[in-house]
Length: 475
Image (cartoon, rainbow, N blue to C red; front, side, top):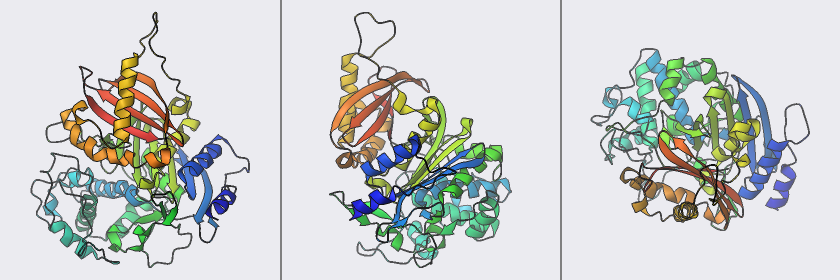
């Protein structure tokens, strides 16, 4: 029954000014079927304006309600950039400094930690925001309960020593912003962020609210069958409950960064400057970005700087500041189940800008007896494939990675490994690019599976022996 409903719903495309499908529609509908995504909304912004909004599939499978331009999606961790933006805005207004001690604004003992480190995941705090009781969680939490939980956490590392993705840090940043501006966080953000960016649909996704156009959330079980995602059934209070909005409004938020509507140019620069650890090295993780700013992932796509982020509920974006292009993809299939909206946004960007099109890259042929250009040898290609397969299997050989990357690789590999049942058998593995990135030899590979394609990029140290950087995109 679900398959019949989905097949009918993908015909309900809401396209600006046309009923004809195009290459973007074809791509998204195909990937939705492969990834078992019930519903999806797309927005594209160029030069500070939203220029396209398209909708596909079902907002609610049980009722057969289609996704529309008005559909309200939970944006999950995309709110990290909004939280960071609000913090930077408070700094621009002179109400705080990004390098203020956390304890100056929040009642918590966190020696050496700054507000900047809260939104760059460098505070040392674990990702353990919500208290449980004998392994069970409540249906409702207050802000006070979440603060008490944070006050009782033991840091995993000293501030600035290690990148540790932590919602707790962002929650504390919201509290600090409230204290500094002497105004409830929601009111401050509506006045200084949502208003100037013309984001009219932003709401709290608290489960008891009656929200027109609310999209239902889904996940997949181990056999790939669709299930309701119950994460959004919990009320985490006014700060930590998910933000919700339609896809065009988040595109307006990104477009505002091009036009100076919310932050100054230097303020946007604060968001998008790569964070550094205490030893001066760049901070980052093993995911769909390898560097991190304030509330946003940073990377490079075919020589083009990009800011990217995803949210647990199945939402994500890719923004290319130098091209003034942003692509936002909202789905209602949770990210860990394989919706991978950042990859979809990258795929759409490639259809809009040829120079960003990963799919258009041709494989580099193996070395020939006489070759006018450098080509990979068979041993290198075999090594790259072996590294990919061990990473995909969740068992990377840490001896093959730089010492600083070993722990992030061990922690990050299971994220891609969880996609393997959906992707299916590896059918082909090709090297596409061999070129420098940030002074290191960098190799971009394409792994074609039975039900999807992964682009896997690694950088090597000066001797070519160890991997120093990893990023992957499910495009």
